[in-house]
Amino acid sequence: MALWGGRFSGETSALFKLFNDSLPVDYRLFEQDVQGSIAWAAAITQAGVLTQDECSRLQQALQDLLAEVSANPERILASGAEDIHSFVEQQLIASVGDLGKKLHTGRSRNDQVATDLKLWCQTEGAALIAGLQALHGALLALAERELDAVMPGYTHLQRAQPVTFGHWCLAYVEMFERDLGRMQDALKRANTCPLGSGALAGTAYAIDRHALATALNFAAPTLNSLDSVSDRDHVIELCGAASIGMMHLSRMAEDLIFFNSGEANFIELSDQVTSGSSLMPQKKNPDALELIRGKTGRVYGNLVGILTTMKALPLAYNKDMQEDKEGLFDVVDSWGICLEMAVLVLDGLKVNRANALLAAQQGYANATELADYLVAKGMPFREAHHVVGEVVVHAIAAQKPIEALPLAELQEFAAVIAEDVYPHLTIAACLGKRDVLGGTAVKQVQQALTAKLAK
Ligand code: ARG
Image (cartoon, rainbow, N blue to C red; front, side, top):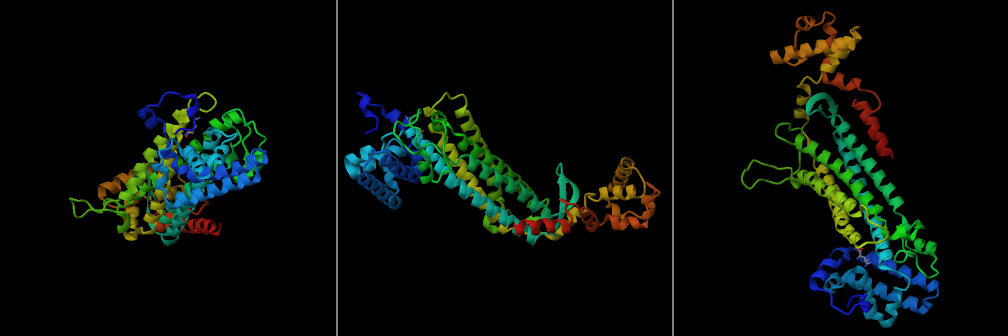
């Protein structure tokens, strides 16, 4: 039986029930609903609605329900209840009878669902933060293993200047640190308790909302009942943080897919995270990374979904908002598993140092060094840039790297070039010169890594 039957004489249609019921989605709020109910029982007891004995019996019944359902989770969906709040109340009434009917005094499913969902965001948000920290750790470990491996750095997917693999790792460390900060920030803002806001106008009972917030581990109660029951900013912020986080993961995945390609062959992915082709025996496909890249799309989709659902919704609660959970749950599941999968990929990743170095030596990645050399000899940079462009055209035609051109040939482009040019054109020189805060010189990367590891 629905909780709201009194006003109705006709039956709701089966189609409507199917359409309206949210239990198949919001069963995931079970623990939060019980937790909120236990705190609510105490709050209305303090307000004089229940005796201490009634409160104890209700709370005990809620604890028992928690234990029973944990042992037998199918019970929730089998109940056919409208939503998780109805389920908990029905079960309570079944176990303690009329006393169970008193729990909903002064409470609405509107402040209840808002509270449950915020509690859920806190728990799951903490798990995502742990996932980000694990990924952070895996990247630092990889940076440590492969710190001075050299590979080409790219712009426009064209070989630009050599970089160290450790430097590449620490670039993603920066991104994931920002993601971590965004999550912590979002959870801080979501740390307020809506319970006691009633359906929309505030509860009519003398509830100590500060004590209630504290009992549920929130930092404070919310301050406006209309806003409390209709605010879903925390859902949007979590989806937003996840979208940015997935964007970072997708970029890392794309880099690694390319590094792992036959064309680049800078890294090898472990058998644990790759799959074969049913047709082509030689293939070892980077499926884990492609799925990380692919799942980014559904996370963005869910963000746009909830933003669109909330757009222009009048105050206060509207049933539209029931649509908030499916997308949020999918976002949290997707981001969480992608973070875990990324750790597995990084842990098993090997750098093919020789190939990566060879690629860095090709592609005229030291052209900037020759220009800098000319600048040191007194040539204005713009002119040096032009001269080196001509040298590169010549070298391409000769099918040689710049450093393989004899001095006499180089001097045809600029008379100031002398024998001392060659040491400037080595990979070690290219890297070593980027010895500035944030640069790719091994010494700088080592310092950056040490600082991260010390934190
Ligand atoms: N199941 C609803 C939700 O997820 C909560 C119930 C509020 N229902 C209502 N008719 N006011 O948003």
